Length: 125
Ligand SMILES: [Zn+2]
Ligand SMILES: [Zn+2]
Image (cartoon, rainbow, N blue to C red; front, side):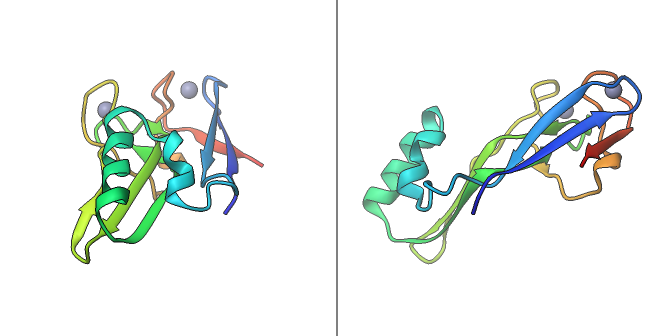
């Protein structure tokens, strides 16, 4: 997996945002990606790796959106399944309204510009 870049521009106010998805080639295991996690998340992931059997781990930059404000975010997210039934998946919060972010899976034009709030974003190819 490599990192994909996404340049998004608002056709209304012309502000640009740069997003990334995926993770670096050298972060091919969760052990190697651990430095990407911050604070409590890193401590928890370390502890899970040490004490439990990891079944599946997904991690990397991903596009999230606030269901309230429709603003896009680009956190380095992680999801670890372990011990057959356990799931570790920290939530990301909107910095404006503190709502829990959800994965952004809709077309980019359905999301709002961080600056002007208009839903006129498009991807610069
Ligand atoms: Zn705008
Ligand atoms: Zn919000």
